[in-house]
Image 1 (tube, helix red, strand yellow):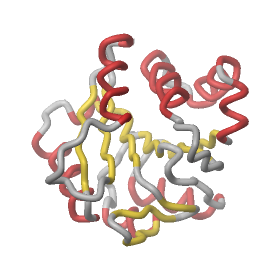
Image 2 (tube, helix red, strand yellow):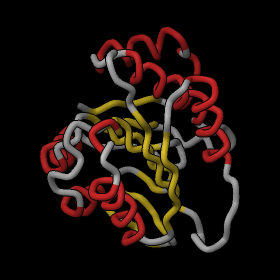
Image 3 (cartoon, helix red, strand yellow):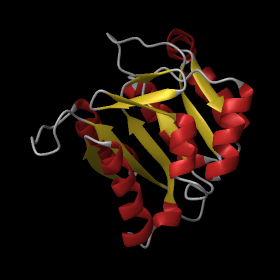
Length: 186
């Protein structure tokens, strides 16, 4: 690989004005130190904050093309996310980010179960231009997906073929992949 790929993380929190070092924030620092993968971390407490965060990345950061992974850490279920007790469907998100995620992998932490049928996933990918959607089919609230996320991010850094990335992820962390039900739609 002749260039680095970066991670942009948006984490839903109850109040963006209250500063807290979350597990995700601390682990992104660890990823930067151990794997030399750069990331930007932002919090949001509204859907407008989510949109603002992505727009700031797109329009204000001249390295936007290098951010391959948009890492969303927010609760939800199936075809929706929850920000500050409001549910937004991935269809609504697709329309909000129409054409704005070209070539990106949108990865959800296991705070949200990612359970889409093929039509829902394809609609999201077609409307946003995203390269893939990934996440977990099982919500293991007592077990954070961050350790499997770190392996996934590292594999995405090293190679481009999504099938090979998923195969290698399963080879390296089969037990966690099965327990958390890792999923990738592309």
